Length: 304
Ligand SMILES: [Zn+2]
Image (cartoon, rainbow, N blue to C red):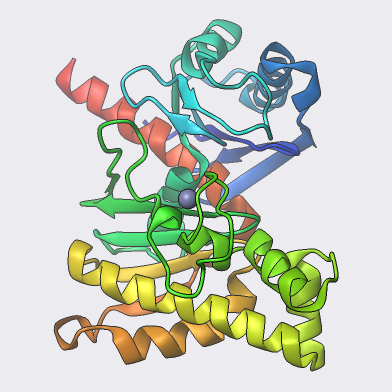
């Protein structure tokens, strides 16, 4: 099969879709706000509209990367946060397949980003990759032999909930204290800066102030990056990847400190495992979702 496929990225604020060719290149894009407050049916309708616009007369499957934990057996949502109200329990694969009249494969958005980077980005030609995505929160995904390791409940690779020294006073998105996400994420930067200064600003603002020379902001960013780098150095010993990729909106801010801590902490046997910035940016999820659709489709064809 050589026709392009469609990948969809369903996030809490926007939904994107792209027509992707068999080399992982984006041919066309569509984007719309996610009608999250209108409920799951509206979110699915919006995603289906974007995909339909790109599918035209092409046959073939569709892939989806979505916020939330995806049940690998059903393509439904096991758990999602309030960024998509009511999303938990939504049978995304079946509901979109009914709307689009074709097979739909669904995975978590960070898993999709990892597939995308391994296909056409910084992880190209690498079979084993650990990817972390540092945005408002901190997500992760493990690729083994070119495929995402889903785990028993679709949640393998969630590095954000590892214990992290220095995060003891910071509350994680999961509700507990002391986790890596609570320090090494946009919300973690904001919380740590607020504790030290009383100022309520976004993580992006903290990063910008650090760049501009604000001493407190610089220290907060340094601590966050160091915590991330040290955790990743330990994880390479567990996973033995070919490379570790850092994606997401806060990656640029945290990478300098993360690289320093990573190099200092990584055990000698894995000193050659590079810590690299991801390169696909906002396209990673749609490209990876397209890859998922191709992989599943080709497997079905070869076994069926
Ligand atoms: Zn947590």
